[in-house]
Image: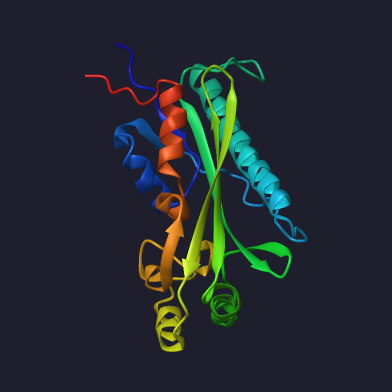
Length: 228
């Protein structure tokens, strides 16, 4: 039997890696983060359809970045003299990106990752203005590049409803510094769960990778089979 296909995860997120390991053995996963750190943002986008389209563009760009790295490594390994060599069976590339979308009046907009010297005030504002006793959406786009040269992108959406935010609890949460580096300023898999009243949709999507949807795509391409 042929060796199982390697899944190349184009992400530095430990949560995303952990989630993918619930579907696949660790030795089938290779981490190759994108080299390009700059990407298209969401500034000026106020409609959910625009945000969805931009998210798809971002994961496609990440996927192309990782593909280029893998192709270059393959050419170097084979000492290929051509500028572009035919794709070898080194794996399937998977890239993903997750955003939190809040609503204000008739507009939708993305809440990014709080950072900078005033990040605490940013998180305080988000929780009190956009989260407390309200619902927001978490979107994850996942892009696949398969060995046969085909591509596929999926987009998962989960609605998260927060209970009324207790100021004392929010102060504690900010002091933990967990909001740093988290899309939307919270982690539902840890302390952020204290604010959540309910969710509609995939929990793993909120953490960073919609497992049911990813499983379905990989299974459709016969990549979930386990060799013995």
